[in-house]
Length: 123
Image (cartoon, rainbow, N blue to C red; front, side):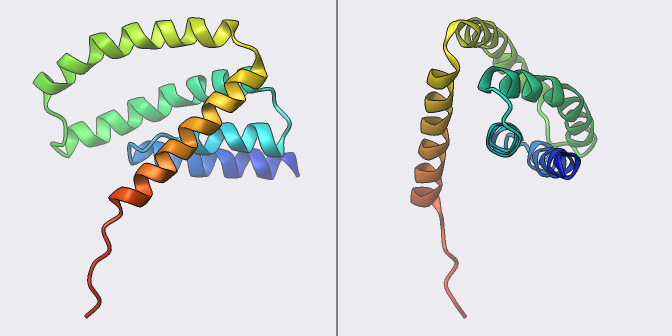
């Protein structure tokens, strides 16, 4: 049964990651809720799973002409710096704190999504 859960988690997180929406929003809750994986391990697993997903997605989006090299350059350095800082912070924080922070992050995303949701008028 756990194989199917891992397969589903990988499928849905890859689908979201490929669309640029963050597969970790699916993968981390799947791992912690359905398989009992500790928060630190789930977040580290997400980072490992992100690498091939990001490489493939980047290649597809680049070939589609959706990436502007100049804009990407301005994002890379701050993203690398904050990734290091965030990883260091996460390694020192207790798992319960990480769970709460991740839950708050997901709630903020959900609320933001509700307020930015644009319904098309019915015909």
